[in-house]
Image 1 (cartoon, helix red, strand yellow):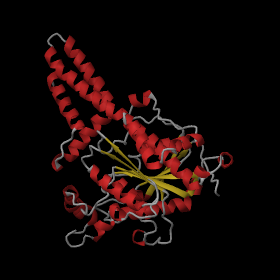
Image 2: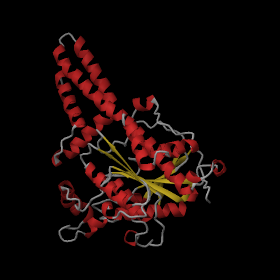
Image 3: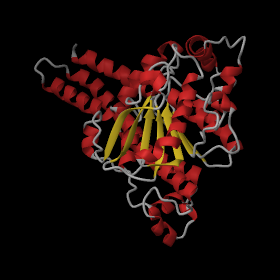
Length: 426
């Protein structure tokens, strides 16, 4: 492939990253291409600069073609700038959602808050450099389901006691995915900061139809309540997070505490959650918002593959499975995160969900909308992903401190509370 063809290809990739095609038939390839370029813009920029430099010094090179390379470098610089600015976006939206004093109060209680990411992490974005954690894999929470009924537990090196819990639910369109593929930057970071993180597999379609997925998430919550102390957790506080289909399950689990329909044979288990952080989640599965894209997903994907139901004959399961229909006054604190360039799940779903939740919930609802950001941006430790980890860290600590009463405690009570897992209200 010639230099010109390489730069034309790069131009197409960068253009898609900045303004992805809105067509349904191109949504998946557009997502993958845009995600890759947006989160690896520094690496594409270095490659383009080297390629252009070689073209300029090559004996039979075409200097005029280097103008295209220069244009690509400028466009990539714009993409990089958007990624770098995500820190300010996280900070400002958390201030809006949690209050002007939240950051100051957190800093008074926690000395390890920061937005810094080691340069070597950005140079090697697919390598997780966090080391102060340990993981125990393949613990059975639902043995009857084999590997789909197993979970992993991440915790600080050497163990802990009385630590808050973060439950990470993987995505994959309810049909693919495993517990060790997603949420790793956040889980490893939080485990290194004293939290216990739990990542379950759950049953997938088309083999298992809805509501098997949410039942397994609920069963995981029940397992944490029963066995969490064995792994150093305080099972009274469980926050939940996940992306895409995992974001949907995160929101639905948080909004349907102790719902017997989703807890067959364990109706008495406490499945309440104390905080929720859905990433680029699906909030409307029934098409009630009038979105044509949602209706197409419902009719051509969810109905035949996930639900095994015809929505024209029975729309109720789709409506009940839609978090936007389940908003409630006693919802836990929510932090909703979504990319404005998401071609798989339209940002308007998140906006509508947040609006509905804010109108009803008594608790804080923070919302970060990230410009120039595709689906699945947090899968590996990119610049934007690392900023999201720090932002979610601050939200989770804020939610945990408020739950245990530290946010309103005196400095003396905070000091007496000791470790991360001890409650001043206990």
